Amino acid sequence: MFGILRCPECNALQGCDLGFKTSSCRSCGKRVDLSNTSLTGPFKDQNEMRSCLWDMKSGKMTEEEVRLKEEILELAVKTRRGPMNRKQREELVLKLIEDGMDTEEKLSSSIREKDIEKEELLSVIGSLRKKELIYSPRYKVFKII
Ligand SMILES: [Zn+2]
Image (cartoon, rainbow, N blue to C red; front, side, top):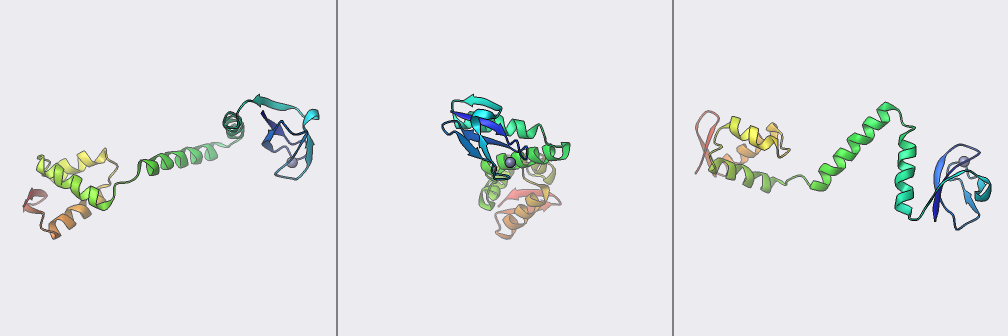
């Protein structure tokens, strides 16, 4: 069983294993007697305790810290989804041109959903042209060679 204790010395919140009689505060080092401290819990599993601890700590965050936390989480999700590598982007753009998205405008609106920036699109188009996979019959219009 696990619990969450607030250090009587420094007020820091931390998780603890209720199988022990005492727990050392990780912030100030004080040995806390678990039978003589108010605890949140008990929690059967550690993950449950951690998520509750995270919520309790979040509640103490300033608006700026909460915003930062959200940004970090969003970034983590994006990273996990994995940005497309260069080759995948080139293949995607080629496929789109083949499917009739043959102007810069159409291309940039259809790649926006895929988290690709316009600058990146222009650079991909540039390298596809250099490889002579596409050409531009008119300004900002592209065709497969
Ligand atoms: Zn402490």
